[in-house]
Length: 392
Image (cartoon, rainbow, N blue to C red; front, side):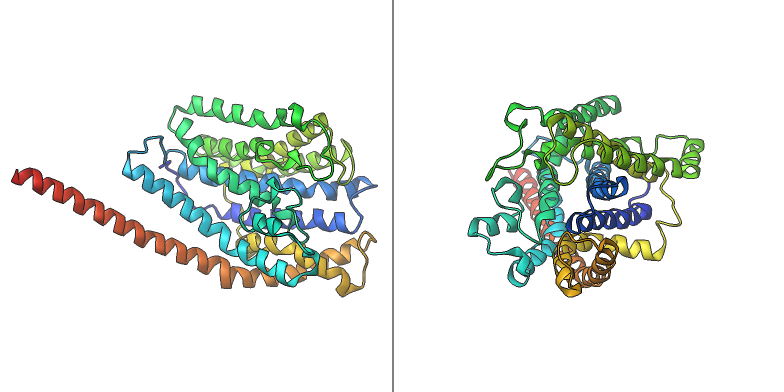
């Protein structure tokens, strides 16, 4: 296992809170019609760049922990056990709260419409981005979790390929992985806007390799800086935030407004801007992790609830309009945003307390018990073999 000096970085938990709030801003902007026009409006639309922040966070946390955990040696019992444990914990972290949200939205929220059996199944198994019409009302934003799940599935294979190689080789491989994103939209099958019933190539996992690579790179650089550099980063973090803000402004000024499908070159540039945005926010806290603001009690609480906030905010946003008597795309952005936050945060806190955290703990505990049984059985088999060899 890759060794880390500090297993849990509270500042990154607080950064999750910022990221989930940014995702709410972009969706409120789209649904109130405030995503086009002025630069400020278009910048609100581009706060979807907090999606690359989430992806980079996943890349950082999982790469620093699991870089050296896996190999292609399927005969190694320890390797098989590590791989199984990794997948069990990932499923335990993501699926219970996710499935609860999907089922309740499909059953109780009118915005979900009347999906087909295939569309329902695709959402249940987190493969909706590969199914035409798979993005359902109140659940459309969960395409990013489908991408996350794809990343979880392939991470052990990436780690087996170059996770145990030298630092220099790993850095070269990470850069090579990132390049996939910048050429993805130019591939002939994906170089045009999708027609009716066609899948959107811009939300397929390879399109986001660079954003996960930001996390990989941060994990590789963690602990390599001299103390003076760490202190400098902590002192001048505002420079990184200004850089992130500049990327929002640049992205808002470059390419089509709103939900218009970007041309290949536009999409590649937007991917670059998202990469720089994510790096500007992740790297300062990965390399110099202390932050009184992000480690405050409220930011930590919002960070813990951030996954449930993300899961629930779109379906609850659909209720805000009728509750306030406001039509879609008719403005009132600040009011809709405030109401969405006030409605979403308590629901997310309940989701975390009643489903997300208890389910994660139960699954992890069950896994440790199963793992202990497997290891005991393996030891017993080894003892029997040794005794048989001795008696012979």
